[in-house]
Every structure is written in structure tokens, then in C-alpha cells.
Image (cartoon, rainbow, N blue to C red; front, side, top):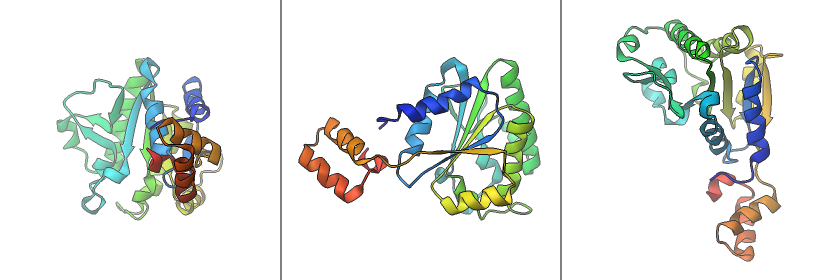
Length: 224
């Protein structure tokens, strides 16, 4: 449930007025509400942008096909409020044999959207799921080089990466040479006052709300 994140939502919506130039990391504690915020943002785009959302927690990592990282197999590439994965026709899906093939298709797909006056916003949620996967070498660094290509070099799309793994964030920043190529935005737990207001607004008494906050702190996702 979205609650009292207007400041964070306003920050994300400011991307619509800027040229893609950096990767945006959304970080914060587990269950602080990052996913809820990002979906609310993508839902708010309307005709201003095209939201593409990839939740890597829903991907079967043990049976990983790198194509599953990016794509949603479909017969059409008609835009929706949020596209869960980049739409790719089945015939093209079958011709993609390497990450480079995938990157080439995505670049072409995003370029066509920009020519139509649409600004793509791509969200990769919980990207640390891929940190140990390899496709002819560590996939994660090849992926971030591609993100840099899309944002800083081609300015085709805003790329947002969400993670609750601080060590992963630090390692990627260092090893993928992201200095000057990425920026960071914290989505933290609710403070006590906000957490109490949220719980009371959903029918709990003040005493019950204080007990919940004592046990769980400001974990927005747990409350919802």
C-alpha cells in the first residue's frame, strides 16, 4: 500500500523532465517499500513515458535463461501502463542467442519508442539476484556496461536499479566503474510518527499501533 511517499514519488517523476544520463540506484532496507514506490511511479506515467518493470525475485534463477532477464514474449509491442519485461515477438525471441543479441534488440526497441515521443523508464527490481550468474563471464558487469550505453551514451531510457543489498551496491559501483555514471536515492523505513499514522489510518488503535511499531519498526511492506 502506497502511503506518505509523495516526496519520493516527486523525485522519481522529475526524471520525466530530464534527459537520461545516469543509472539511478534505489536502495534501502528490506521491506522499506521500494517496490511499492516504483510500481506507483510507473503507474503514474500515463502518456509521458513507457514503464518497463522486471522483478528478478520472480525469475527462476536455477533454470536461468539470460533472455528471461529482459523479455516478455508477446505477439505485439503495443504499449501498456506497465510492461512486465520488454515485449519481444516469438520469432525474434528464438533468434536471440547471446546477451549481445538481446542488447541490440533492446536498443532498437527503445530507439523506436523515442522516435514516437515516448520516454522509456526501465526498472530492474532486486538486481542482486543476478550477482553470481555468469554467461561467458560475470553477467552483472556486462549488464551495467549496457545500462551506461543506454543512459550516458545514447540517452535512450532512464534505467532504475533497486536493491536492498548494500554490499552488492558497493561492489557494483567499484567494479563496474560507475563513478559519474550513477546516482543514488534512499527509500528508508518509516520514522515512528509516520508508521503510527499509517497503522491508525488502517483501523488500528493507537495502543495497537505502538505495539506493532515496537516489534517491526517502520517496515512499510510488512504493514501492508
